[in-house]
Length: 102
Image (cartoon, rainbow, N blue to C red):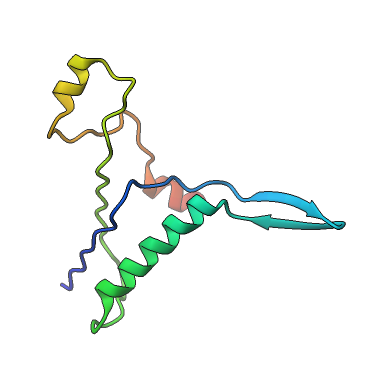
């Protein structure tokens, strides 16, 4: 099985909803700059990781890890517990169900 790994430096940026503005009577939709730049960075590093490799085909398994800073709003006790420990969200989306509903 072919394995592709890459790291995108910097703090991850959540995908923002497109913004819509009217300019001279025309409606224009655009993605906020911060979100667009992050998406572009991910694409650049993914393409570099794929250089010289065959295009992936068929079913894929994907593992994504985000290294996030500890929130400043957390208590000192909670911050100390979080150091070098993985944190998972209490709620998660059931991707299989989501995929079937589209």
